[in-house]
Length: 142
Image 1: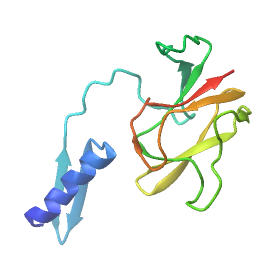
Image 2 (image 1 turned 90 degrees about the vertical axis):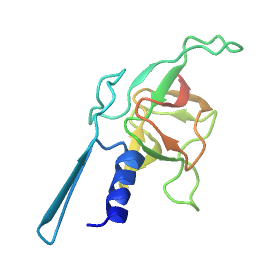
Image 3 (image 1 turned 120 degrees about the vertical axis):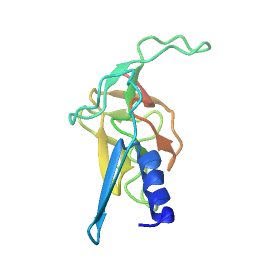
């Protein structure tokens, strides 16, 4: 492996939030590992995004709003394809288990479902923008 290939692997670590990557080619094995920062929240579960009460905004004291959060690091998409309609819009009523967006992580499309029924009050992320684990994506009025 040359330096350019190793730098590309390092970029993959950063871009996808990986803690380790290992590649073997022609009998040469390279393993890159970085120390993960101590998480402020528990690690993600396969059960879907967390839903928790959001912090009320200064100009909008609505403690009843819940945040639908990103269950993983990736790229946020509002629709299943660039030419399709978005899954939800502000003001839409959603059911428990309804898909509200997709997060692409490592070339895999992961559907994010609402854990509660309610009305989408605010969409907090722009389409095709990166998101972090635990980042609020939507505010929902149950």
